[in-house]
Length: 131
Image 1 (cartoon, rainbow, N blue to C red):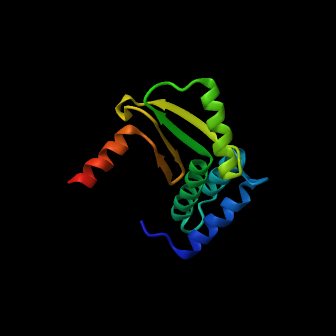
Image 2: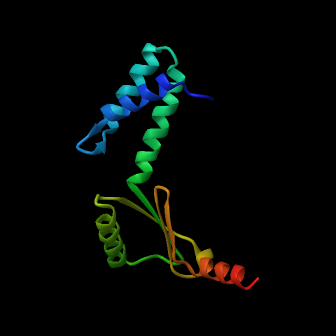
Image 3: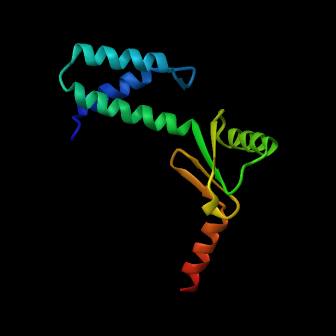
């Protein structure tokens, strides 16, 4: 669905109103969504669509998904937390997953940034280079 410029502008304004101290305030998001859904202004579906995309992008920016071939020790998890928070300049919520298909190493995804230091990725890169 195509979103009008007015709906896009309104969704950005609503999104900025939901930010508190540089972080997304979940209670404000709920209030905005319920008030827009209740009042149903012109183009409200486009407004809510644009707003939901902005919120989803912000949530992704604050979360890091860490995949490893085996479970990481609490010390390694804390070190990774500190390293990523320092790199991004903000506290990130880390979610840890084990994925035996990686064979070794880790893969980290923060928003649209992906660092793949897994053995599987290295083997695939080597395969591509040799063919």
